Length: 276
Length: 277
Image (tube, rainbow over all chains, first blue to last red; front, side, top):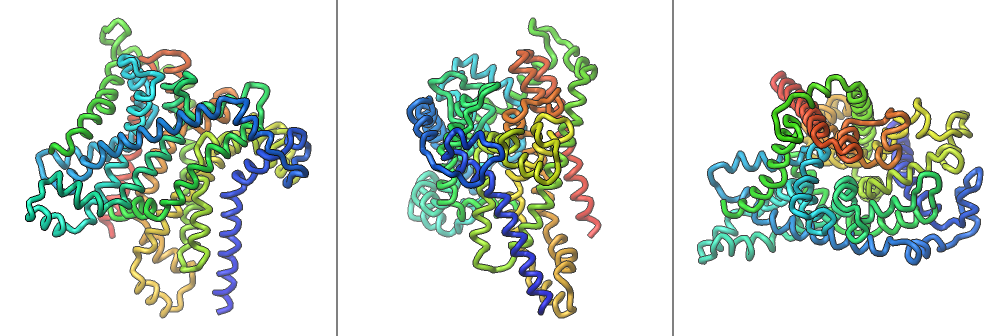
């Protein structure tokens, strides 16, 4: 009994340390973002700021182009999320419910495209977008992001659709519903948690994405936050206060969004991986 | 069939066709003539093979530590305490934080003069930290691996936790009747029960490792002296800094082949061990 208790204490200490490890960089970001410039550049660095300022946030809002990038990121993330759902909802329903020639092949093609390394496709994608005159456009970015989000969206949604009892859908079909009607009136409402989780996944991935944004959207009109954030770093001078304030502003919406749907997302993710 | 048509067409146009374009670029000159010179050049490019080695160290080191730490945290969380939900939420923060934000924040913590981690290391007696962990050849790769581990270990923990909940409780009961210790349960019940999950995680982490350009690009850009130039970054530089699309295409096919070979080895190992039991 005593050994069990000692073990529990040990595990507790371990978990506290792990949480500290997970949160410390985020906390340091926050601390730096509210420190006056002189304190940021103090040796040794102070853990707790002596004076708190919101000056860096003011700089980000008023003196940088971050508000514009914020808007761009929102447009691109929302657009690519809607586009992913428009493709993935019917597609995943088809994979989950319908039998047709070539289904197995198509399904494994979708699955394996999820494993595609981004670097292996970025050059040809650049050429295609250039040919279509879609570089530095919102549409081009949205299309490029579908390459990343669509495969996993189809996978997640198909596993949700499979959890809906077939009887419910068959009953609706007996009542004279078409396949499309079944999807829209029965399957869709029943899988709303899954659709929400998928939508948030697409939004978060797009919001955070760096490499495609770096390669396909170099113009300030369409530039998104991850690239815009780099404007605070020059080769020899980095405005750490503003950079950390901008990082906080970019991260907090995503973290809130993620925690709002955390439960549904994790169950979708793990059910696919532990059973499949 | 009709339902899956849009997805299929999209994947054909934006994944299958680009892959074909890659193949075409790697085998033809800008004029359009068939050539093997881009692949031949790969074998002579010493920086490329150095970057393959760097990739193996970076991805291998990251994946190993992510697996060990993530599995330990998953096992530690596998008991119904009130804190489990809170801890799980907290550790997921690094995973959700944008990669670029993670990279820049860690770069700030590693800063030679004002970085909090450098200061900690100096206080612990690692005087080298004063020059900045990211500029010293001996410390730069471990420093980057630490960021990658921080970012991804929670994913392993969450998957392991889910896998543990699928283990038959009667196994534990039987073991406890026999008076087995906690470590005994970990070794003989949890780890064997997790094998399937761990293999899928290993596969995903490896693929993501090969994709993780953001952290290195933002923190070191492959430097100092190309020491952190992992293969995907090498491809990217060839394409977008040197604008040699044909050579970049040939390199990306090499990247693709290495990853495909690794996946095949994993799957072979896994199905082989499955047959034994």
